[in-house]
Length: 446
Image (cartoon, rainbow, N blue to C red):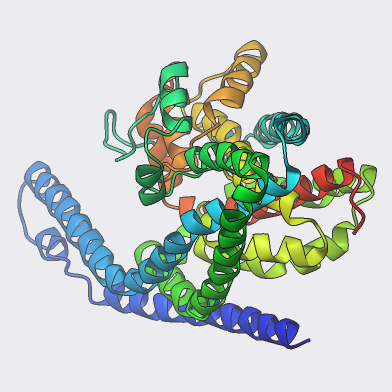
C-alpha cells in the first residue's frame, strides 16, 4: 500500500512537471520572439533599388534566423541540463541492473535447453510484432498520405541534417552484439552485449552447482540494491521531466505544431491503434489481463513519454512487471532483449517517416519497393537501441538506399521530439506485452 501511494505521488508530480514545463517554455519562447533582433525591418523602409533591397533583406533575415536559433538553443540548454542529469542517473543504473537481473533470471532457468526454448519463443514474438508494426506504418502513410496533403516547404538541396546514415550489415551487427569486453559494453550501456555475456555467465553459474551459489546470491543482492538505487533516482524524475519539456518548447515553440497537426494526428492515431487494438488483441489471445497490465506499468509509460526515452523507463518497467506477477526469469530475459529487438513505436515510425518524406518530394514508392523496405528494416532495425536518435539514423539509411533526398529528414526534425515521446511510450507497452505473452507461453499464471 505504501509503495502504491508513493508511486501515485510520483505520477502526479511528473504530470505537474510536464504542465509547468509547457508553461515555462512557452513564456520564455514568447519573450525571446518578442525581443527578437530584426535589422531587416529597417532595410525594408530604405529607398533603394528593389533588387538590392531584396537581396540585402534576404541575407539579413537568414542572419536573424541563425542568431535567433542559437539564442533559443543556448537558453534551452540551461533547462536541458536538468533532464541530462536525470537521464545520466538512469544510464548509471541500467548496465549493473540488467547484468544482475539477467544473470539471476538465467541461473533460475538453469540450462541452455531451457534458455533456448524461452529465447525461441521470444524471438518469434519479436519478429511477428516487428512485422505488424512495420506494416501498420506503411498502411497509415499510404492511407492518409501526410506528405502529399501537407505541402511542406522543402529544405534546400544537400542541406545538412546532422544525422549520419548507418547501413547495418552482418559485420556491423556481429560487432555490436558480441562483446569484446564486458567493461566496455557496460561503460557504453550497450544492452545486447551485456545480455550475451549474462546468458553465458548465468548458465555457467547454475551448472557448477554449489560453487556457483555464492556468486548467484551476490548478484541477487546486487539486483535488490540496484532497485533501491532506482527508487532514489526516481525522486529526480519530475525535475528531469520539467527540464526536458521546457527545453523543447523554448526551441520549437508551440506554433510549430500548427503546421504539423495532420502528421502528428496520423502518427499518434497509428500508435493508439497499435496499443489499443493490436496489442490488446495479442493480449486477449494469450489471456493476458491487458487493462491491469497497463495500470501496473502506467508510471514507466508516463516516464518514457515525458522524457522521450524508453531507456529512462527500463528500471521501473522491470520492477512493475515483477509486481504484476511475471517471474524474474522471464522479465530479466525478455525485457533487455526487447530494448534492441522489439521497439514497436520506433519501428512503426521508420516505414511511416521514410514514405512520408518520399511523398513530400512527389516520389511514388511502388508496393514492391515498400515490401522490400519493410523486409530490410526487419533486419536493419535490430541492435540499434544503443545509437543516439536511432530511428533517424536508420531512416537516413533507408532514404539513401531508395534514392530519396537525405535532407528530407529536416522535414521531421521540428516535431521529432514530440513524435519520439509517443514512440517511447509505445515501446514500453510493447515490451511489457512481450514479457507477459512469453510468461503465458511458459505456463505462468498471474
